[in-house]
Amino acid sequence: MPTPETLPVTDRSKVKRVPKRGCYDRALINQILDEALVLHVGFMANNQPFVIPMTYGRDGDRLYLHGAVTSRLLQNLEQGIDICVTATLLDGLVLARSIFHHSMNYRSVVLFGRATLVDDEAEKLHALKVLSEHIVPGRWEQARKPNPQEANATTVLAFPIEEGSAKVRSGGPVDDAADYELPIWAGQLPLKLTPSAPIADDKLESDIPVPENLLHYHRRA
Image (tube, rainbow, N blue to C red):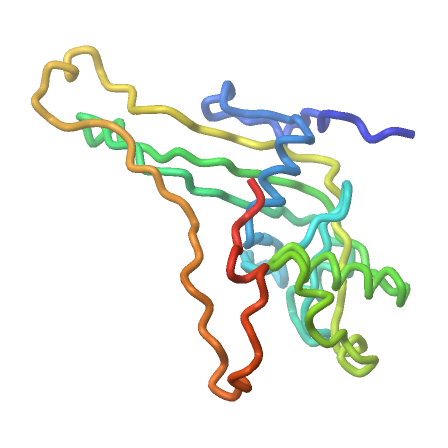
């Protein structure tokens, strides 16, 4: 069965604040997830809410999360509890004539669901490759692969992209009509994630060149 092009609109995924900015299109959701680097995972443990930032990778209609087997986060998530994950790309600051109307341009994704433990060795190794390639495409083939001891010390979870939404703001400020005559600069200050030059490890042999994928690193847009 083909994957639906849009996610279903549910009570908890429906964008209620400025709903015109909401989008349930899977292609846009995937695009934002592929460009972002950090996922914030919200969950409850012992009646205490937690929100933990972590790396991730997307493979089709699922996300892979990973960490140490001793991680409280992953120990709770593998029990199948309800969680909320979010990713945000900040594209710029929006400066209005009025402080009240200042804003930001952004692209964000909020997803709901439950994660499941990946215990198949082949899928686990594939998931770790997906995670690595999400951060630096091409790095998996450049570095040493996880050995059995490292793999056993790592928990990998799969999270389905089945319920959630994207929310996007773009464009300039929207001021009150009376404020457009004020002699105050207004507009946008674009922001972009850009890498600096790679810095070699102090213990690196001097004749080892910087890989091309790091010299020309950029996030997928």
